[in-house]
Amino acid sequence: MKEIVKEHPLRPIILRFDLDKPLLDFEKKGLEAHYLMHDLTWDMLQQFKTHHNALEEIDIEISELEYLLLPIEQELDFLEVFLRIKDPSALPFDEKDGEAEITIDIGDFFQGVVYHNQRLQDIHASVDGEHQWFKSHFDMIYEKESWIAPRLWDDIHQIYRNYLQAQVDIVTLDRDQEEFRGALAEVFDYQDSYMDYGDSVFAAYNELHNRSEQVYRRAEVANSRLADLKQ
Image 1 (tube, rainbow, N blue to C red):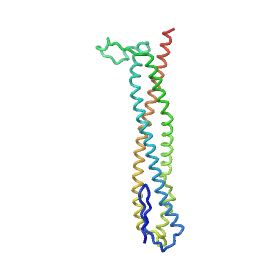
Image 2 (spheres, rainbow, N blue to C red; image 1 turned 90 degrees about the vertical axis):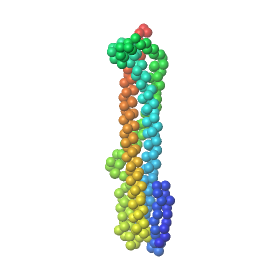
Image 3 (cartoon, one colour; image 1 turned 135 degrees about the vertical axis):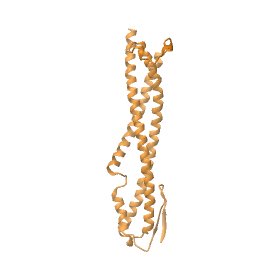
Image 4 (tube, rainbow, N blue to C red; image 1 turned 60 degrees about the horizontal axis):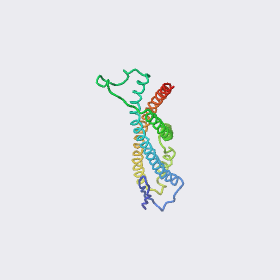
């Protein structure tokens, strides 16, 4: 028996072979399936990491846009009261705040709205692209359960069914398969984490988008009312 180690980025594949036996087609096909499973799983792990990193960048941008939107909303509340779009009771004042003086630079305010809107537009393509990959992947998982086709497992099982004719030592193949299943389980765990994070980021984006659109429409009304006052 000769031990052969195939270095692989997912995990080293260690098998023993009786090289006095010929390598028959069923075994060649089964071993290729075993190696291909490693390739597919490693590739999927890298894709998860890439898309998870992209979601982290979107998440940071969402947080920044939420932070920028708050003062816009607050100034808009005051502006709407000044323009009599809203009643003063809409403001969160208590009695001691009644005499407070609020100053709003109209130019800066509307520049802030435009800037916020542009940044929200800028991340739309990234969000849309990540959501499409996310949906496509989990639609595939829902349909097929894995990126590994069932036929690959069947190809490996042919070696077990004909182990007396196989070059590969069935004990080492069984051990190696179990270790691969462990690595596969870890990637599935990463997939679950990615799914939860994706759901959270996309929900936050939708909430930000809806909230922002409401603010933009309110700002348009305020701008129109200011234009009327200038006439």
